Image (cartoon, rainbow, N blue to C red; front, side, top):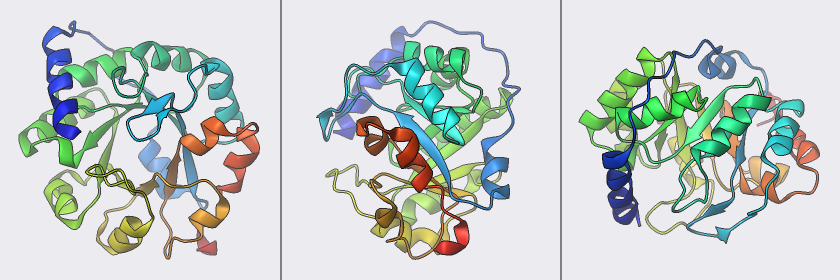
Amino acid sequence: MLTRIRQTKEREVQTMPTYQPEPSTHPSLRHTLLQSKQIEVIAEIKRASPSRGVIRENIDIEHLAKTYERSGACAISVLTDETYFHGSSDDLRRVAEVTNVPLLAKDFIFSPKQVDRARYFGAHIVLVIARFVTIEEAEAVIRRAKQLQMDVLIEVHTEEEIEKMRPFASGAIFGVNNRDLSNFTVNVEPTNRLHDRLPRPYISESGFFTKEDVQQLRQMPDGLLIGTALVLDEHPERLLRTFQLPKEVL
């Protein structure tokens, strides 16, 4: 799957317009995660995924984004990949127009051109997936993000990926993806296994539907990235608040 996604993204970048974004002036999410006494929630707007297919196609983007912000989400993640997640940069723009929290452009990013596009449409944070990029690509993407005063979320799944991306740890946020991208299975074992190896701050991503799921974590992350559960819930504001646990409860 990642090979196919990579081919798609390379074609996209080849035909992508050149954007001239202004640097972000938004407070850093990294600072928020380091300072907070509770487990923070990055709430995601997600229409579909390769593993589940369509999750919720007809989403009131503005309403959901404002609900997330009102419920205390520390940031909002917006899927901008069109082919595999049915998202778009326009979704990102629409969220940026109605919220004031930091926004993560959730996409398969390997080129500085994608960083420019993400910032142009309103992102304050970009995603770098360790398994998806070379060291040289990661360096170029992170350098461009820093020039635009954006945060970088570095996603890992194994110890080898942590070590690959450790040179970029200073000033970054790490995220453990509990979904294995090779077979799409999900459990919290990666977060429990990697906790002691991860630079702080770090978040845990995928597989959280209830407070009890969070309590399977043996040690505390600085935040959670939650998408499907919130998108599907009739009362996402109530569900979101159940995840905002004091860090010491774990």
